[in-house]
Amino acid sequence: MHYTKFAAKFDCSPQEIAITTFDQNQTQTSNIVLLADIKRRTLPEDVKFDRRELDQILRIYSFMVSGGDWRDYGISHLPDRAVFSVFRRASEMPLYRIEKNPKLSRKQGAYAVITASGQIIKRGQDLSQVLKIFDKQIKLVHAD
Image (tube, rainbow, N blue to C red):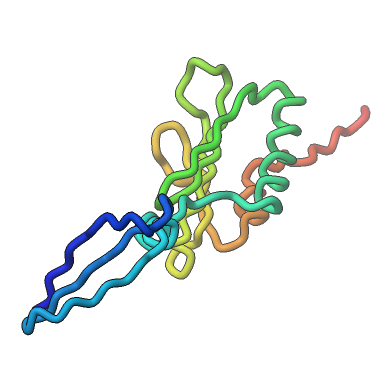
């Protein structure tokens, strides 16, 4: 059985901590550890959209804004997913949420488009395929 004791040593820098461990025979072992290493190991990184993903999303967003359909957006980076929310007005609930959830990448796909009511209207592995839900259909007009 090991007992761990955190000790402040005067010869450590403010970015370091001294960890002293005692085993059953009361043998003492001391290590100096960087606080940044401990923080890096204990706190998971938030999920974020990369540059390519944001480029694809913002391209669709700009087309929808120019068409008058969308007016505002918000980006959330959470520990388990990244969310791009689209609003008609800033004071409303989001019309759509474009989510990236890496835990679902091998199952249903990491990307999803979700409506304001929570219905998933498109999900997949490839963001460009998922965003095709927003492509407007080209309509043929017949001249009489």
